Image 1 (tube, rainbow, N blue to C red):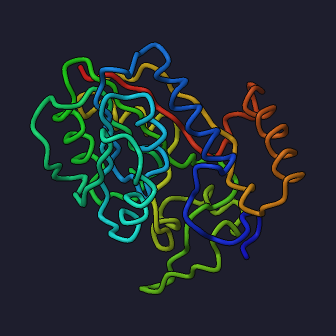
Image 2 (image 1 turned 135 degrees about the vertical axis):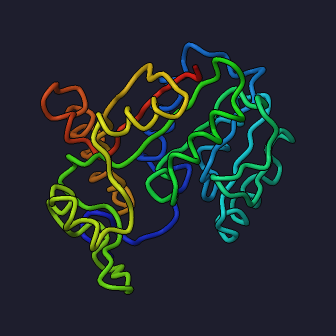
Image 3 (image 1 turned 90 degrees about the vertical axis):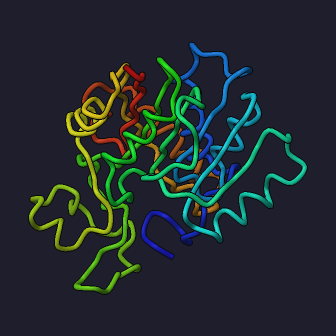
Length: 249
């Protein structure tokens, strides 16, 4: 168990936090009919978001470098529409032709990619003209560190979600201990726009994965509480994630 999160495990489609984030992605793309579109998710993990969009898109592709997660994604895709596929691939060298996708998603993955600028340029390359990019990254203003802590070459997994205000520490301190990058609204907008995109919308999302505790009353309370925070002009800037909808130039 870890403070606030429950047992660490891969996300599931029925997790309320995953449902909320999927709704956020679909909300950003609400102006776009996906029925005739190809959607690519970079860093898809076990495919929860890829499979959600596959229900609406003509074709959905998920890529990741984690074999175990992809094996789980393929198992979940059994009996699914034939338009869904998963493949091992590196975000910095996508095995796809130019201008082959209508939408590219990078959901909670950009912060782990070694060269995010190269990954974004690859996303821009495979997108069709005026195609859309959806990115979500950890928010620097969120008061809890939501990744493992590194001490020397050792990753201390027990600290996951347990270090208050470490995200607010000066960057030279964070770099010594962090296992993933975090961003401000200005920083993620800048990196997206410097790599071939125009930011259309930037939003905060406050809902953490507290439903992993597995208690319905806590889940329902969190839903009401964090949804209220997301609507508050002041508190929403401290949300867990920043979502960006951008369009290829």
